[in-house]
Length: 336
Image (cartoon, rainbow, N blue to C red; front, side):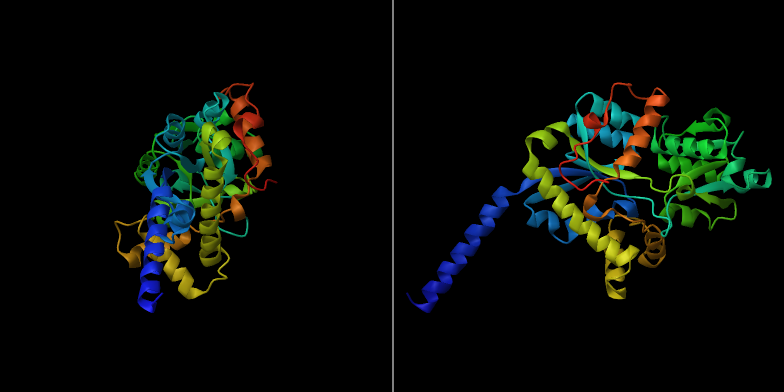
């Protein structure tokens, strides 16, 4: 065989492999919010980790957690990363959804969820979360993660949940708008949004969620029960690629072990999805401010999930017969 024939054969083999890989790629839809804390999925996509795992990913973006859970249950979305809500738990109780991993986690050494107050409320005496009694607190929906956070504040400060006047506003954007216009007195928010908000003289930071829920598993990775039970190879491939995105994100923006160039490259990557409507120089500090810890290897804090489940049950937001076994499939990641 001549050299030219060998080269031609190698080209044919390479082309055949490319075609085979393209055919083998599994088309999946991943649910996300346009937040820095959802960046592991964006990293896995942009750096080819999903592609290398045989996954052809399309993103579907949401503005709140519960609609994403509904989309998973309906089959419109294959994998999601968002907070545990009453809606998600009830869908798990019906056999539709399983939590398969952990993502965003409170870490006292890293800026996390912040509690903010309007200046109007602050001037009227809302100086710390202990003063929330009798004040309005914005949440997305009743039975949302924001509702759970309000409960944990009230619990630690020694007053009833009902002493806080909850205002369900459906979307995060509506919460932000209501605080800016001082229509609500307080809310809790992720740092990349909160740190931007407190640049406004009418908004003041009064506390941190980590002081109330120090080991809070803020977001989880979840999929349909059908995927978790019947398609373990798909779930494993997704989590493996997602975890590589987590590792890159934490190294660049949280632990800062990857160096300055890696930090800048990560911020530029995330800017394609987060604050993409702003010029880079304006978006970069906002993205950097949102760098909360993502769990290595998508590990899952079962103790935190159990606490959340117990609260949703106690409030009547989910059925009492729903168990951790119904909610969580622990076979895919390390748990603690």
